[in-house]
Structures are given as structure tokens and as C-alpha cells.
Image (tube, rainbow, N blue to C red; front, side, top):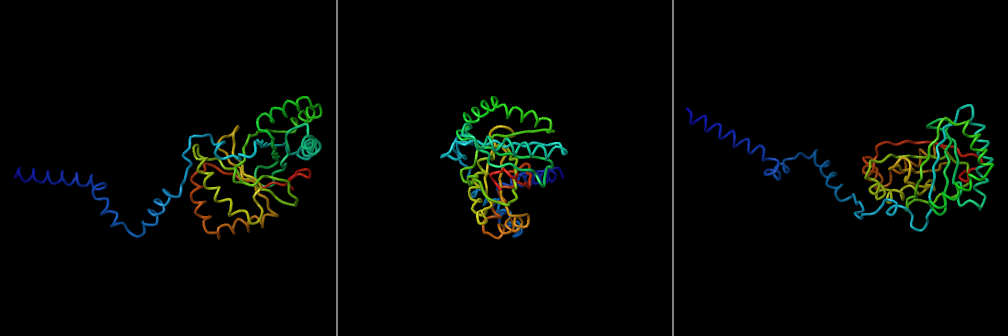
Length: 286
């Protein structure tokens, strides 16, 4: 009787060893027994190992992703305006900002200035370019402190604002250069908060994805943050109207390869936001 018990325990122990070892020793057999319903998922996982091509070089994102032929730095400003002051705010911006844009004394240009239509309400968005990078930014800020009209503008503006924030950006090398365009257009600013460590991977995918979004000349500019909220990406698009936006975005899904790029970029995103914006009359982007 004792021998039988010992024999049974030994078999159970051996069975336990076999069960624990099954994931490794029986893996080929288990794979053959996998149902066909699981194969697409496994194939997708295996495919991802070969599709994702992250640049292995040890270098800063700004050196790997930004345009090499320019040294432009961009500043993106978000101003949350008191609702009752929005009209007055727009008026003083349209009086003062174009003067800075047109004055060759300042190494900067106003790329665009908007009010948010859909998204965060009573908000103004300004995008500036500094030709020459950080030294140009420093030069402009220094000269503006001596510009009495701008000093008075800032004082008046401060009484109209609830809050403000900004970011310093570089432009992706594979995106369009933001240049003035005629209107009327609406603009969409799509902002993505990426998971830390995924900026290069995002750039690899969007270097391919941008070609799917060029047919309607809707791509205005693509940027990534350097100072401010980090691992932020901003894509700026122009459309004739909301229906045109809908039609162009739907058409992308009928292009072979677009759905794959979306599939692999979505997991890189922690948070995303879309703003529909209307340009002010003095904005170079109309």
C-alpha cells in the first residue's frame, strides 16, 4: 500500500514537472495545436518585430528628427482669454503682432494666429518662427523689452488673460515647411502626448505616414517639443471646411498601408487633443 502511495506521488510529481516544463519543452507541439482563430493575433505580433524600425543611434531627438538644412526654432503660445475680453484681445493682437512680423529688426516671423473654434473655448493660439534658433529667440526677447509699444501691449494683454502657456518646438524633417497660404481655411491642431522614449519610433512611422496625407495640400507643419511639456507632438492641418476635413480623413483609410501605420502609432500615445481654429485677419496662414 505504501509503495502504491509513493508511486502515485512520484507520478504526480513527475506530472507536475511536465506541466511546469510544458511552456518550454512542448512549445512546438502547442503551437501546432493553436487554433486558427489565434493565428492572426500571433502573426500581427510577429510582424511588429519586423515593422518597427527604431533608429539605434545614440543621439538627441532634435538631431535625429529635425530639419538639418534650417536652424529654425518655433514657439507655440496658448492664451486663455476672459470671454468678455476676446474681441479686445484680438484687436490689440492684430495691431501689434504684424508689426513685429514685418520688422526686419527682429529675426522672427509670425507663422499663424488663431482663435479656437472647437476645443478649448475663448483661446488664442500663436505660432512664431525664430530664424537662427535659440540665439534668435534671445535677441528678439531682448529687443522687445526695449520696444515701448510692445511693453504697453503686454500690460494691456495681461488684464485680458486667465492663463497662458507656451512651448518651444522643432519641426520634423519629413513634414512640410509652414508657409503662408490664402484662404479661407479652417485649421486643425492635433496635439499628442507621447509615452516617454517613443519619439524616435513616432518619427519613423510618420515619415512614412505623411505621404498618405499630401493629396489635398492639407499638411501645414509637424513639430515636436523641446521646452515646456515634453514628448509633445503637434500636427497642423488646413481644410476648406469641416466636411472637407471629414472627407479627406476618411479617404486616407482607403489607402493601402495607412491602417497599419495607425495601428502601430496609437500605442505610443498617452493623450491626444484636437483643436479646430479660425485664423485672425492678419494671420499669414489664412
